[in-house]
Image (cartoon, rainbow, N blue to C red; front, side, top):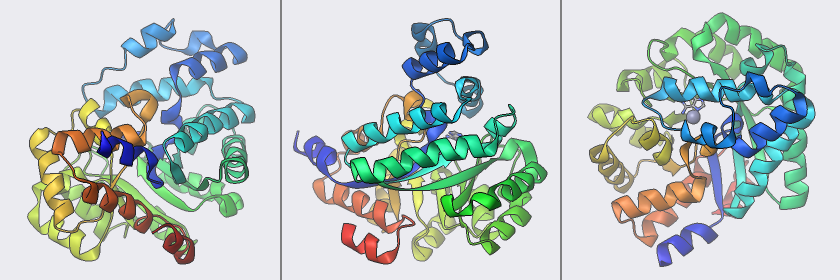
Length: 328
Ligand code: ADE
Ligand code: ZN
């Protein structure tokens, strides 16, 4: 009742959101029809697509997520995708969004970097004027394509630097530890990009240490496996390195059980900078407020804890200090 109402009206920042993961089945089929690529989709109907959103682990999700991206071809497609998300986010009282995109998922299909970037950026600019929603764009390297391809992508991004706030690292985690990408991330930091990485989602706590020590990250995306390493938790709390946690994603991808969720509350109480986010809401069955609500209901969070999480979302954001202060 009251807690759900509080969650729905609290202005919040969203820090872990893959724009490609906001492609709802309806829009997927609409774009497939518009572009004449229905045959490229793994499912024949909307219902069939939705029924397939039932995952066993990260890779079973990623296979469908990449397949769905086949409908994103023109600048307008990227605009429509992003605009649909931003309207949905505004309905959840999101006032600032830091949005991931995966350039290699598009350049690998011969969709130019500029096409994706410009479509997304134009929607972000419209959100600022029409919805009062500010944003930053973060480009993620696909770890399964390795460090060389990441380096090529970083160089492709340099002409568009003014539109890109940071770099991240996503896709298949196991077997692709953060340390492989040290050189790319060093160069990105030198170019002035903020630095984040998915780590400790499906991979071990050791990968979170690597993201901290080899990539010098400003935030850890997911990071829930840190819970298994007390020294790591102590370090993250002391350094106030934020974790962008996505509860419904973790449940859908079966990365942790209820016991770990409870530990999350302990870490929050100990002062770790935990934030709540939605990851790929079209696939995981809920936008950001649904993620807050799920956690609130499974842990019995009180209003004070909801405020803490909402405050953390701005503290952990890449907003300028003055603007951040205005949100706190
Ligand atoms: N790409 C999109 N969503 C992802 C996730 N949850 N983990 C890794 N890569 C992703
Ligand atoms: Zn993610």
